[in-house]
Image (tube, rainbow, N blue to C red; front, side, top):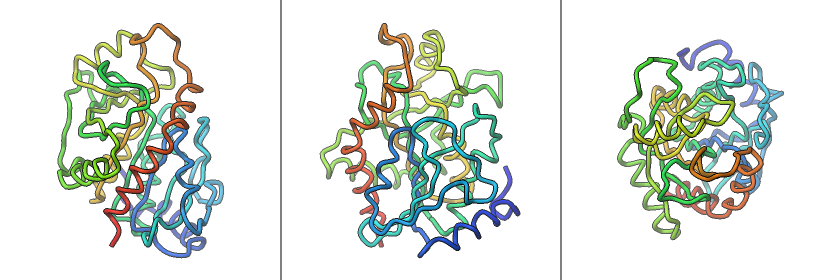
Length: 269
């Protein structure tokens, strides 16, 4: 993976810095349907992806394609409304470009969120899950079945505990589990979901892991949160569709916002 001193990353950072009023301390990647959190920031400054050199435009519904800098209390926060997916034709370097940008802009912590399918049959649609480990179910790196990874450079105990404390203080039930990264763009088959469950996966989605790995590689503190927007294929006898994902995301916006705000409060100086 290209480091944060690449020419394209530097050019993107320079263009964004010209528009920002201050440097962020924390950055958020907002998943499908979760972008409304950016509208709660005080004194927002918006930078469309189209104005950032070397940034593609997201093609997935629910991903606006803009950075929004604002404040939560006295904490400067940068949000990314839209991410890049492997299935859109982007390589891993491009997928991680926003993370490298965050680092160059001065962020020390990244909160990475997503909308994910629920694999754990004991949980419910609309639950929020703290990511405590992952499965790379893309088979891009190996043809062998993946095993759950709980690398503490990504899943730092102090970061997980911070999120747990924020959930307790806000009265939000926060699930904890293993996120499985799948390639997409089609949803997984029931057989694939059964296999992911056997391997230890609790949720499945088409993003997030490359971003979390890039953030850890750059030495950033990482917190990952999944919004479980639908049961994965084969768990219910109904077809899956992206409209359901967005509808559930909107339904849990309030709880999601309270949790993220509480986490940010614990990160404030």
